[in-house]
Image 1 (tube, one colour):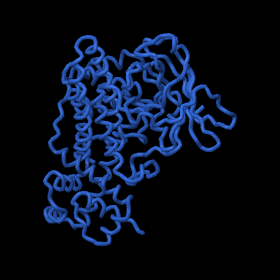
Image 2: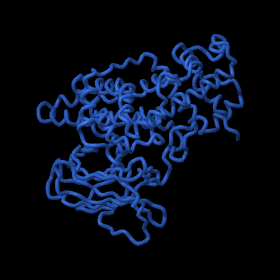
Image 3: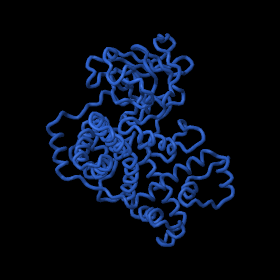
Image 4: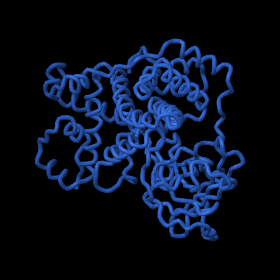
Length: 181
Length: 265
């Protein structure tokens, strides 16, 4: 975890306690993800802005019942986002039904890409927040596709340390994805 | 037989290389370790594909609108009670490296395969419904009164949705002496109007309404439905009754009459 960013659990706690500063910090951290998911799914900037607004207002209203033990904040927000996107789709579909039935087919396939982006973006964000050494290990392993041995040589670390960083970081990433099933 | 250690499994998931014959042998015989590798492989694949994710930030005006709505709108919701799991089987808690195995379907890469099914269905039905399994609830016995041997595990007040004012009802999750679960639904004021269709279908949904299971159709305004033993009811705590046309379309119509959340009585 880097020192410039608030710790996840501190942020989660402040958020569920109802701090408006925490809401702003949560917005700063996750609004690009929320907005991008909505933009991809809906293909419309103004609709994506509306969804972003709805998501954070909803999150704020429900923040007292947010339980960090049950879901990481990012995944929880993605859940609300998908819900709001679904509502926007339902609204659009209702309109489309009364006007032009073919529009329904066009919009129907969108949720898949939204979903995939959510996972990738959460993982990318989590990688950025790892400590320096594990972050470099993970980037070399996954972005540069170096072998464990090559990473050990490159960073001057024992092979066992590399393995253990990869195992721990991978397990951590999995917990961040767990709730988006 | 001793399971393969976590680091070796992770390495295997990342590199696909097995150094040790004993590990290969164990994996051939052990579904649990294979599942673990499959799970980690999935995380690894997502991680690999995350290198070029580009996100767009919303315009700053969006924050201004949120701040204004938070300032001027209604206050934060006060949670009525702690969100009690209705569950028979445990809900997976994030934070550990081992996952609960209890709700895992035997054999088979779980999350992955199910998700593919979900996405396919979602792509077909579009925005609203992600249908987990149609007709998994078997043996609907409408109108059968509950006997004294049943324990009420959870109860929900069903409230009307827009367009259905005056409708209401209750849902109860019961366990009988043999451990079987039933959902008993009573609907009021939902039969006079037609809405999307004349049929009344009962669903159990996830809290975010994104994922649902059809429980069965009401005959009249009361129904008792067997909940399959493999179903984790904690994951689907919201009970919903919808108006459905008799058109053979298995998806939720989007026209919900009443809805409520199961909570411990």
